[in-house]
Structures are given as C-alpha cells and as structure tokens.
Length: 436
Image (cartoon, rainbow, N blue to C red; front, side, top):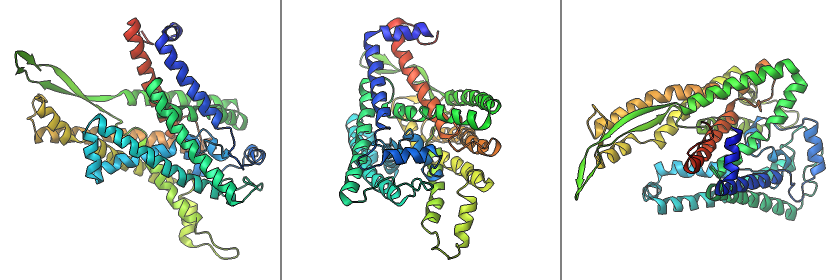
C-alpha cells in the first residue's frame, strides 16, 4: 500500500493532481475558521466551548459545513446550497420537458443545466445567508448563548455579512469544480468528505471524555463493522446480461458483443437520507414559529410535535424517519432510472436481454428487477441512518455520532470512488493499482 502511494507521488501528472486537490482542501478548511465581518469570534467560541450548540434543526447543515455554520464563518453555508440546487434541477427534469430535452442533448445540454444549477446555488445561498443572519441576531442559532453573536445590528453590517456568506458559497462551488476539472475525484463530494471527516476527532474525543475508554473502543468496533457493511452494500450490484446482435455497416461487422447493465443495490446513494432529514425538520420549524407568548399555554399540537418529532431518541421519530427513507429511496430511483429509456436505447443499437423480447417486455423486466433490488437497498439505508439515533439512546451520544447516518454513507462512498480514480490512473501508467 505504501509503495503504491509512493508510485502515485512519483508520477508527475498524478502528483500534480493530488497536490492541487490537497491545496484546495486546505483552503476550504481554513475558510471554516475565518469569521464573517461583524461576527464576534470570541463570543461564538465561548458559547461553543460551553456546549451551547443548536438543536437538530441545523445539525445536518453544520455537518456538511465542517462545523463552520455555528461559527458563522465565511464558509458557514458550506456545500448545502449547491446540493439543494443540484437536486432541484434533477427533479425539474420530470416536471419541465425543456430540462429533459437539455439532458438528452449531450454535452451542450449538460453545460446549460450546470449553468442553471450555478445560478440557483447563488440564489439559495443568498436566501440561506439571510436566514442564518436573522437566526444569529435573534439568538436562535445558539439558543443557550447569552452573548451576542453579531453585536452590531446595523443594516450595513447585516448586508455585508449576507454578501460575504453568499460569496463564500460561490467560492466553494468554484473550488469544487476546479477539483473535478484539474484534481482527483469529484470536487463537490471531496469537499463534503473533508467537512465530515474534520468532525471525527472531536466526536471521538467527546465519547472518550464523557463515556470512558470502554465505550470508546466499543464505538470503534461498531464503526468498523458499519464501514464493512457499507462497503459491501455499496459495491453490490445486480448485473443484467445484454447481448448485441451482429450488424454489417459497410464492410465492417459491428456488434456481437456481450455486456451487462449494472443495477446497484443502493442506486439512490445518500439522497433519501437527506430528503427524510429535511422533511422531519419541517415540523420542528413549524412548532418553533408557533411558540406561545409569555404567560400563555402552549397549543396541544405544538406540544405533541415538541415531544415526539423533535427528539431523535423517540420511537415515533425513528419510525417516521425509517419509513420516509424507504419511500424516498423508491421515489428517487424511479426518477433517476427510466426502464423505458434504457429499453429504447438497447433496441436502437440492437441489444437485447437473453430470453426477453425487445421493447416493452424488456422495460417490464427491468422495472421488475429494479423494484425488488431497491427494497434491500432502502432497508439498508434506513438501518444505517438510525445508527446515530440508537447510539443516542444506548450510550447517550449526541446526534453527531461519527459512525452512522449521513456521514458514514458519504465518507465511504466518496472514498471508494476517489480510490477507484487513483487506481485507474495508476494502472494506465504502471499496470498496477493501489491494491494488488
């Protein structure tokens, strides 16, 4: 393994890509600690050191920003606006025919969709920055903090912070695209990977301090088993054989080859977990904006939401979380994989599944396989997402439990894809990859 890394850094082209990627990651992490203008860095650090962090509503965004959200740094919004914009543009392909036409046009259409995604990212960044500044000024970002995060409440300071946060989102988007173009791996995914990995030492240190060495090593053992499970499932796929008939084009014989359609067990990735988390944040937000005035009784439905849908250790919350993950897994797979489109493309190029007629029978067969292989993938996603909530009940860990949920799914998935790219480039030059 060490010799393989040595070969990677001895290859000039690959070394340049790796160093460029590491440089961008370093800049990304430095930006997470640079406070926005007008923010009191000392007050924020004092509140965070006393454990006065926000509740579950902002934990996902804080996770993806590498802890920059609660510090209101220049990269406080992280990569979340871009993720949201990408998901929205992808879903709009189903609603707006023009978006689907652009997707089918090839490289020119894809560049147009990318441009729309960038514009939407800036718009969402502006909206999120305004929301974040209002939460910081009202004290709802760090509810237990008595010190002001933004001491100066003037309009100029507020506008300056909003512009800075939005510019930070644009800079992160640009850096991610630079890594994809000139570095190794997918830039956006690597930045998310970096932000999540940055929180692991703090989370493990908190478990060691509060729970003791016994619980710490038990958590590590659970973590290794979880990583092994995630790697196994992420690499699992159902290969549907495809045979291409021979065709004569001029004097050449084309086709006659055998290949397969790889259908992954987890085709949806981490998107269903993000969808389910976002949907479960809505009741908490609604109840937060419907709190009674001082001296007035709380409404029954608001009290029920506060007792059942805002605590990750509650059975109703866990059941809803699991059910919504299963639902969104099927929903997202149905949007991203179109059996009829795959069947038409196979028929156009003379391909067929052995024993299945071309056309509608092929589409029905693909839908049959897809619907059944998605079930274990959805159940797997649900169980992995529940690991931090179960840890919250068993060992009193916080909801940023490192080995489980969104964090471990993203880290393992991004790590596997990045290693595959490095391995492929090493094999092109040395005929050996990272692992022999």
